[in-house]
Image 1 (cartoon, rainbow, N blue to C red):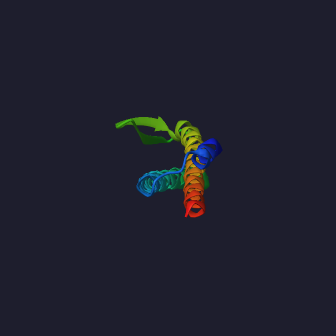
Image 2 (cartoon, rainbow, N blue to C red):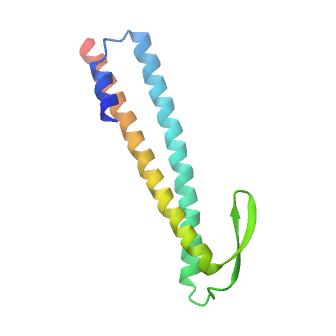
Image 3 (cartoon, one colour):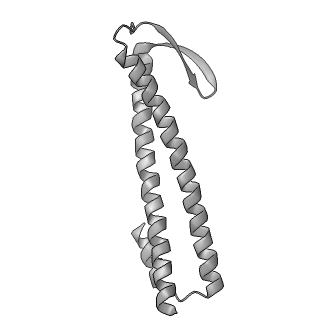
Length: 122
């Protein structure tokens, strides 16, 4: 990410039109990343709610039948099988979320570098 920001700063001076296009492209990328962050946060909250419900209710028998949607197919599993899979998915979602947040911050840095470059050129 930092190499992208430094390459933007080291790039030759951009014309006003090129700078505007680059700024709009970065803003568009940031919007897409922000939407994806929202989707992943929502999905993570759903996973967390299910895991909490299954774990908090100590009365839920681990051999109890439950259903899980995997790739558009509803499969029958036991609670004991589903909880570890949901926790693994939740961990993966957190990692993806961290990656997206880092990408978002990188785009912010690129925009700041572009603004600095434009203000120093003016």
